[in-house]
Amino acid sequence: MNFLEERIMKDGIVKEGNVLKVDSFLNHQMDVALIDEIGAEFARRFAGEKITKVLTIEASGIAIAYAAARAFGVPMVFAKKAKSINIDGDMYSAEVESFTHKNKNMVIVSKKFLSAEDSVLIVDDFLANGCALQGLISITEASGATVAGIGIAIEKGFQYGGRSIRNLGYHLESLAIVESMDPETKTIVFRAQ
Ligand code: 5GP
Image (cartoon, rainbow, N blue to C red; front, side):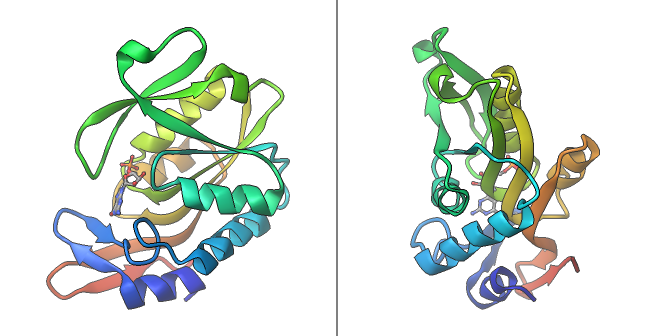
């Protein structure tokens, strides 16, 4: 088991509805040393790629995107949730359905911060059905930038997002892939990588 899988086993809580709670160390209270380690691990896994920017979506992707950007020495940009009436021609936008909140949000990135010269590492804390990633990919490609890679802290391998993103040919690296989890027995099984 790697450092993140060990931490999930220790402090992750399996909830009903295919939700894994990691709010004691990843997305509410944050273990900053662990988050730094996640950033360094992304830098190691994408060392062969040219990265000019790290892109994520607010709110819970921001910390790991910061750590990854720090490790690569490049700027970090996060897609902001916006009311659709606020969207003008200066923004790239995409509609993203939230897995945890079951609502839809427009997310926006200013055209000032992504361009055809950029080679982007997209990161997020979780990958479930892939809706957040599809939005970030579409914003990146609308700007003419290249998606150099996608780094995820925790992929739920029993949901279809990971398969569909890999089938599209993207270089996707997930530090922990949950193969199955059971809220009754509290068991979590990881995919061997
Ligand atoms: P997707 O768009 O891939 O369906 O879901 C990814 C987004 O939903 C992530 O940005 C993450 O914030 C949230 N998410 C999905 N599954 C989980 C989960 O099991 N636990 C938590 N805490 N967040 C999740």
